Image (cartoon, rainbow, N blue to C red; front, side, top):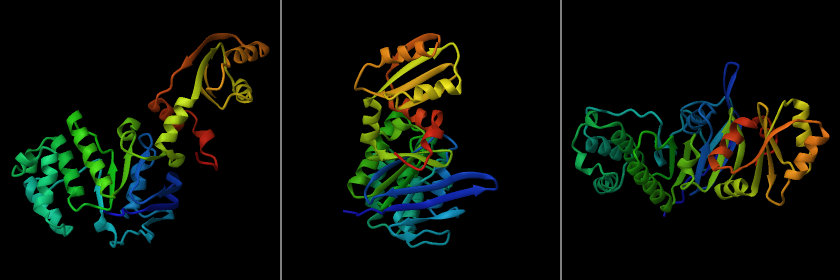
Length: 319
């Protein structure tokens, strides 16, 4: 069984002029772990992956793969890595089989024909192996990209938006392929802006927003955090910063998310705080228009973490 590669970054930063795409990012991915690297579009995920792979040079900080410092001219570990970018390019004048065997030879894959057939059969591409890639659909090309990235049974598999363009059957096939790779000991790093894509695949998640890590914990703890929290949304006739600060000062309120004249109050599930909230509203002479309890999904929690409350979550302490 493979041992997998570790991935570690220290204060990883990438600037383009005055714009900071990645801001002092610290990752610590264990060997054989399945790690979900999440964030909205434009959060800095792909830039981070390009630095991890040595394609982009960091402005500050460092990347280490299994302890070895990664730089743009370091090739010692690159043969142990498989990469599926969001936007893939192919040698379209080749057949799928020629393309796959080309990379198998490049990676010095053991038993390349057997390995190639195994992957293509799993992805329902075996019958199409002699067809030129130019004749493939976008979904078929997407799956061929996974075949190319896994032909050499890598120790680290890096995936950027892995299921984009796949139909439901293709998603299941890729998920099964990834689980098989992890069972062999491969480390998985899966980047996505959709939490449900990785929920069933990853063990631990790091959530990035505006180039900075705002959450890093196990998927189990993230799910527990969502289910243990009570969310009550109140709509007032008017809301200002003083009112928001007042609700945040209440001892049972853990977080306040504001949107217009509506406030989402996040509390634990230990008690019913509606009476306390109503009393506070009366004391402040506020006009309550609506109060309702919200059931938060993982996707909604993801949006709250990355967009609505970034200023509170980008301090010194990570979750």
